[in-house]
Image (cartoon, rainbow, N blue to C red):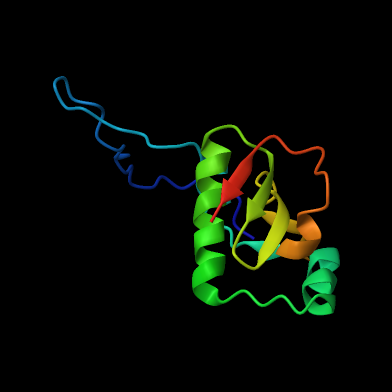
Length: 122
C-alpha cells in the first residue's frame, strides 16, 4: 500500500452567474408551494366510500376544475372548504389537497357545514 501524498492538478471551480445590476430576477414561489401545486388531488378513503354509496360520479374535467379552484382558494388563505357542484357537495382540505367527504346535492341542502373557512361554487 502506497501512503505517499501525490500532487494533483488543481481545477478552477465555476459558480453560477451572480445577479447582474439592471437585470430583474423573479422567484415565483418557494419549494413547498411549488410541490403543493404539482401534487394531484387526493380522495380520502371515507370520501371514496361516500361517493360510491351515494352513486356520485364526477368526470375527469370536473375533477380538474375542482383541483384548480382548490388551488385558487389555497392562494387566498382558505384551508378547509365546501365545494358545491351540480351533482355533489364536497368538503375538501386545500392544505392537504384532499377531498374529505362527499354527499349529493339533495342531502347537502339539509346539512350545516362546520369547520370550513371558504366555499367554492362550481
